[in-house]
Each structure stands twice: as C-alpha cells, then as structure tokens.
Amino acid sequence: MLVVDNLTVRYSGILALQEVSIEVKKGETVLLVGSNGAGKSSLINTVIGLVPSASGRIVLNGKDISAVSCSARAQLGIGYSPEGRRVFSSLTVRENILSSTQGIPISTARENLAWIEKTFPLLAERANQPANQLSGGEQQIVAIARAVSRMPKLLLLDEPFLGLAPVWIGRVSETIRELQRRGTTILMTEQMARPALKLVDRAYIMRNGLVRRSGTVAEIRDSALAEEYL
Ligand SMILES: Nc1ncnc2c1ncn2[C@@H]1O[C@H](COP(=O)(O)OP(=O)(O)OP(=O)(O)O)[C@@H](O)[C@H]1O
Ligand SMILES: [Mg+2]
Image 1: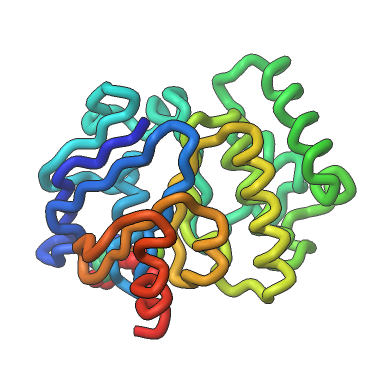
Image 2: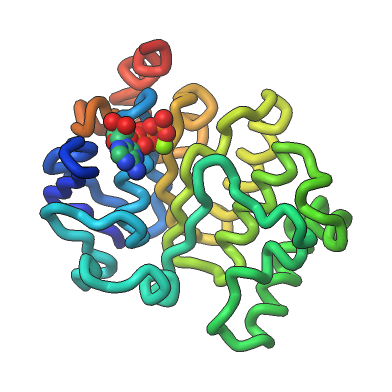
C-alpha cells in the first residue's frame, strides 16, 4: 500500500532522514521504533506531505504522491494522528472528530461518527464535553478518532503512547486493535517498544536518520527493546 523509497529529508542543513526505504502492505501494522531524534516524525510528516523531501519517493497504491498536497493525500485515504495528540482544546469531543471530515458527504461523516461512537463508547459519553476537560489518555483516543473520521485506508499514528500511564497505554492499544479488526492498514511510531511490539506485524528500527534493522516482531524484538534504553 505504502512504499517510501530512498527518502532524504533535511531541515536547513540538519539531515533528518538519509535514504530511508520502508514498505507497509495492505492490512499490516508496521512500527517505526527509535529514540529521540531518530527521524520517526520526519518520516510520518513527509508521508502526509507536511515536510518536503530533499530526494526520494512516496508511493501510495502504486501512485507516486511525492508532489501531491497534504489535503489531496487525505482524500486519497491517508489519516494522521500527530505526536503530542494535538486536539482542539475549546471544541467538544464530537466537534474534534468531525473537524477532519470536510470534503466528504455529510451523510458519510455521520455514518463514520456513528461507527466511532458505537465502537469507542467513551467518545459517545464525552461527545459534548470540551476536549481540554479530558485526561491525556482520553485526548489521545480523541486524536485517533479524528484521524479515522474519514475511514482512512492508511492510518499514521505518531507516538500514540507518549506520556500516558500504563492503564491508558492499554486502552489506546485496544483502540488500535479495534481499527485493525476493521481492516485498517497502520504505520505507527513509538519510543516505547514493549507495548508497541504487541500490536504490530513488523518493525523498522531507526537511529540518527537511518533504518538500522527491520523484520518481523520475532526477528527484531530484542534489538527493538534494547533501543528503548538508548
Ligand atoms: N522542524 C525542524 N527543524 C529543524 N530540525 C528538526 C525539525 N524537526 C526535526 N528536526 C531534527 O531532525 C532530526 C529527526 O527528528 P524527528 O523529530 O523526526 O525524530 P523523532 O524520531 O520523531 O524523535 P522523537 O522521538 O523525539 O519524536 C532530529 O535531529 C531533529 O532535531
Ligand atoms: Mg517524533
């Protein structure tokens, strides 16, 4: 579904990604794991079109989308939940979820919302509450729900466990599993390898803008856990 081919990203002199290649197949959940500054967010942000690449290609379902705008990429079926769960704090939970549905028919947006609120009862219970009254874990679930409000084919989750207590890591994991059951293809990043490895099929270990190793969870488990403590 997604091929990132020889991607290089620079921020005025700083080399954030150096000829990185990864692949995510339809129906898979793939993890990018690595410590601070490894280049995980740079990769995700280049896939959604927020950060320009210096060279390389982003290919979605066989189509080179490297030159396609952010909003057009969303329309092609890419959903995104940013690092640090940036919810709109003064909007209600339901308004947050619906804020990503511009451009799709209102009936589809309503159907999607109904599925989301049925599948994640917390979001129905809190529908009319301002997002800033929610806990960090609850806000993370709102951020994921916003990312899936268009029912994307490919969902990008940037550090969904960041700053969460274990009980909320568990609940966010359950949210991700529910989306997997629905057939969503997922690319996620994490510094916390242990809970992330429970959710994914394969992983890429990143360090200093490079992919160091990749493989199935069984193949890279020990190296990924070691990376957690760097
Ligand atoms: N907007 C920016 N301007 C300049 N340098 C940046 C910018 N964003 C990231 N970098 C640099 O690019 C490199 C990769 O950073 P990136 O945020 O992609 O890593 P990360 O793996 O997501 O790290 P973290 O786990 O801390 O989120 C780092 O050296 C970082 O300092
Ligand atoms: Mg990051």
